[in-house]
Length: 86
Image (spheres, rainbow, N blue to C red):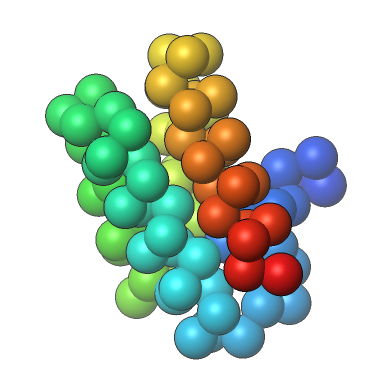
């Protein structure tokens, strides 16, 4: 179960599969660009989560294991991307 404080982006409950996939790809791209190989585990799990929703929780855990500055960069970029799409 994903805590309510972490229910954002691809972890938002009730998303249709296509929307979840789009959000996973956006997060994966940002993680790769912002962090490079430091986010390899996160990038792998986000890709896996497109086909296997059971990988969503491990992907969230991988995001939270990033160094604080890497995590902030990924989340800030994702937030800016989400704001511009709305």
